[in-house]
Image (cartoon, rainbow, N blue to C red; front, side):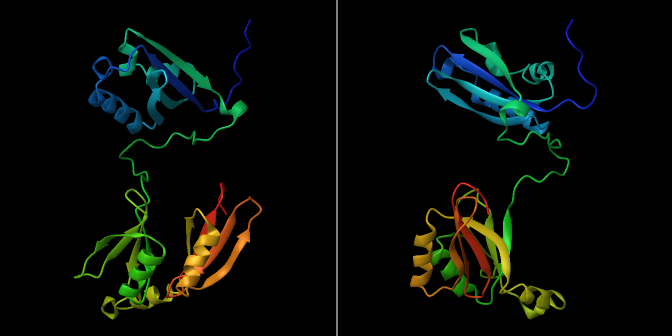
Length: 246
């Protein structure tokens, strides 16, 4: 007789659905719009972890969250890939209590419940907009995404989909205490960290334009290397290279 489950909350698990198709002919595979609708449904209820194609042999990989195997089977019940006749279809359980986990297993709130979905931008207070643009674009390599001459709003980022920096120049017409509070933020540690492919090369780039390095390069216990530097207004940033965070 099999032992009964212990009482209490069941551990979260993730499940891998793997399909190996007999052909990669697009006409024999689920239509993209149908697959997108299925994935959107998983995302809305917080089940989707990852999804992507398999190439050799052709197929499809889906990773979902569930508390037990029967629940996982219900989650993928309407999977368009399950309707393929000439394909191997399998669902596997991965218990991260034994093997470790590289993903967040906590079920997020369903879509529309007020969960955060994206870090959009972080404001940095500067005194001279044009001088700041020159530093962030020409020295650090950020891309100028938005520049509104009427309002003075400027937004830069490392590319599409990346969180942006918005440069804020305080204006007296904002009134108090907003104007003074904004100016007080200038010249402090921003708490913003950049990843770089080479701390020494970044240091040389900053040195070339006489930008001030406040700390480093410094080897860290987690195996990486860090560098602290400031923009023309003294706003401090951290840059690091390595596989961990500092």
